[in-house]
Length: 316
Image (cartoon, rainbow, N blue to C red; front, side, top):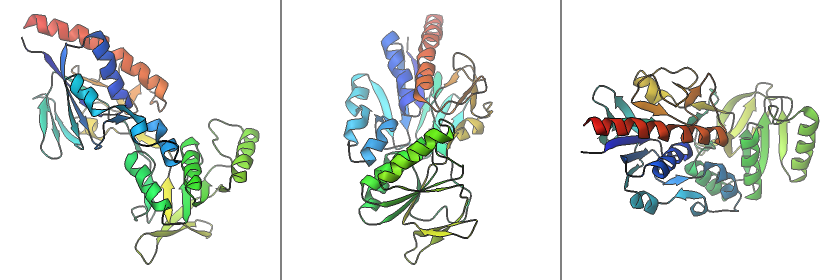
């Protein structure tokens, strides 16, 4: 009797936590295949800020090294983006043609950064702050350029700004709202935070709406222009203005999505063979962007997998 086959699309923190929980409960129940779009094993995305600040290295934030996958007999495809789910044939297909059949499919496609829809957003030097590649580009740019602008005064934007300042750049944080971290702080607390960060050398422009990013003679971004006409220099622009659930793959497979891939309490989608966890998910109308609820999601699915797979195996 062959094992059931579990394919995981997404090699991030939520998907791999679900696999870890499954291995604790039933390590021999599934043959497991993992697709990761990045060329790295699973790492702690939350710790990218200390890497940017020079306090840690990439190796320090790896959660599951390549040997862990080998030790647990998990097939890992790195640098491969799944672009199609054939639900009838129960098969996933990557952009390079790599394909795998599945009995159970777990979607852990995470989120995508929100990029302001403004002229110049595609210029070299304009990036998000989401993964190791973004972090490496910021570190490299800080070594050869001076002016950085971070769009977004939330926690992620402030972490990016602090790291770039520690790397020696002249950093300005641009925020649309009247005060920083408005979802977490009232104005009094935000003013105290702003004063503290200004003492570290950071600059702030609040209630400013970006109109366009300007191309320099070198072809990369050189300045940022606001709707009021003000322009400031920018050799690097980091957009940290929020995230959106990455539902493109699920939508292309005609899975029901509404502010995320819609799941029930066991993280099952409207296709009973397909589950989803992480920032790509909408559970009871809510899409979460914090680690704690995502790890709760990851813990909820292995029991269901074990029960259903055991029944299927007995039926064979």
